[in-house]
Length: 547
Image (cartoon, rainbow, N blue to C red; front, top):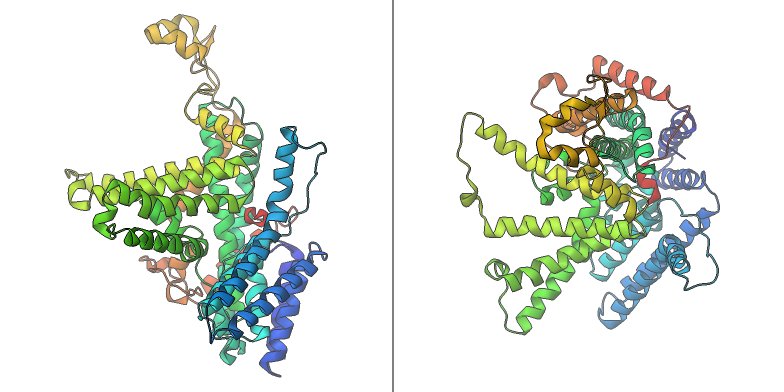
């Protein structure tokens, strides 16, 4: 079931909220059961067969968590063996649905297998509910889990606002809320802030992301030989589509959560405003970054430090400033973590390159911070020095991210390389005008090269034509969306202290953009919902549903 559909907005959601609070009067267990049932209906709406998979995964992991906790008084090999088996089983399930058939198809393409293996339908959200439960098992092994109730665990995994595409939840921030009776008391402020945040997210998805999506789809579908201007416009369009699609879903998820009295963690905080790649990952898919840091990066970093200590090698900041120390203590865990993050997003060499690129970026960023501390990076100030110093790190970071997003979106690595080549100008300029043949002489000896590589075209008359309408229209739209993403406050800054997210951000300094439960804001929210609902005739899936 899609958030951006009539059946959800006008059917499922009102019934779910009304039933939840009506049953809460009879006691929290009834409300919990209702919310669990609603979440299963939500998940099974697309394909009821996968309800068996979801229920089986929950039953297996919950039972295993109880076994791990039962030996908590005597931790050791038994716990580690149970945890390893549980993690392996979860990853095996993920491997079967996400990677096995693409791998067999690749082997068939190489001629190593006789028959084409075909494909399998990928269950929506399998990565998210699998990773959520792996994290829970790890915390059980470490003795961090205090709340063990079955209903609370069911809600922790299946709570429908986050089930399909995140945020990836941590039990310590969610299960206590489900155990708290205050969660089940209706509060008008929760409903008002939730509806507002949902409306903003829905408008991002339907009115912005889906408007630019056809241009991005068309461009990535014809990547080979695409010239300079078209390549950049397509990549910018997809970058904005991904931004407003993903942030829109995150807004809707948090808004829906607070409608049921549950505060979900912030997952998206204006990442394109980041001045470094490190900061970008602190703002983009924030719960995934936290998950990867806690369960992959930190254990690897700790293991490397212990290995160095066992051999009498130094650790710490001074050791990281050496080439050997930097390579083992920072580069190795960083690149490995990002490589796994890339592979998590999908099977294909393009995702491997995506992860390796980000791993390399992060290493360069760390190296810059270590070997060129702030005192050595001072730039001579001028009247515009402050603005320039604020601009270029953001621009450079976004440019680096934009290249990775080409590999993130492309159907395969070959298409991605073709598009990057077009962005580098290797397929011509793509400018839809020509110059008179006689004017070619003004380009001197470079004229023939520019002509051969498509950077200039000649015609028998003066410059003619302007940019074709589709390119001009979509490039203008993409630039307008970029202006919003880079310059406007995000919705959590607008909501300020009323923000329903678990973690707060600094409120907008413009008082006219501070949300409050007032009639003007109610009218604006209603207008956004009305405008978005008018475009429900062709609902589009969220981009992160494929993961």
